[in-house]
Image (cartoon, rainbow, N blue to C red; front, side, top):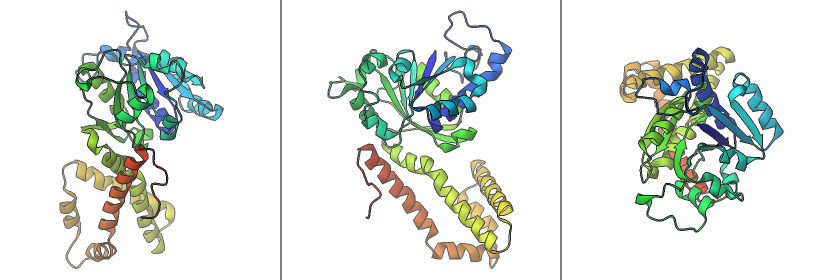
Length: 324
């Protein structure tokens, strides 16, 4: 099986890195090809979490020499199974069984999927779109234009199956929170298992209905920037009170990580906050300042605003963050 990343930038490299690194132990222990030549040894393990087939060959499609060199540097230990194609998108799609659409949303509008021959190259294949704010319908329109797609409940096997996925920048360290949109009609069991397997290589996965994907984009896609701002603010406060910046940043990051892990282990955020907040203590005083400054409301509004902006970007609007 061949997987092509179309528009292989930061997230595309992260996805490839996660998949290739997870396959490396199996490839090292058994480098012999499978009888069919279509699967890697990892796919032959008796493990219900693995799909029947996983990719054994990879293609990264880019438009610039700098992007190609970056891929060669970051994935240098995997170049034996990775091909880099510059300005040869059609060739990359023709050779693929699964395509990850990882370009910038504007490149979709610029016609990356309307290249002559692309419609035929995509027939019967699985296309995974990780474009922020871009619905499956928008991708279909770019591929098929105004062509009638027929009844969505009885989709032809020759049509390209498109699934919307939203990973985040923590993919780079295999700690992404990835949201996979439910498909209509549902993907086959093999396709669904493959998509889930691919993105569990770079972190955790949750499946949600398509109508909440813009909110998921705001929470998980934009979330790292929001958390980074809060971390910066806590670091600045500590520095103002005498802590060295390097130590303050490390301490703030570890505190944020530990708090998140406690929540993941079952602690409710409100109960955790109450446990730390001794009556009349320093934490109570600090929290009162944050509440007076409407930090809670501002963060919640930020997520809501990012969600609306993601939706508008998906409709091709410009200047979505202009004056309100």
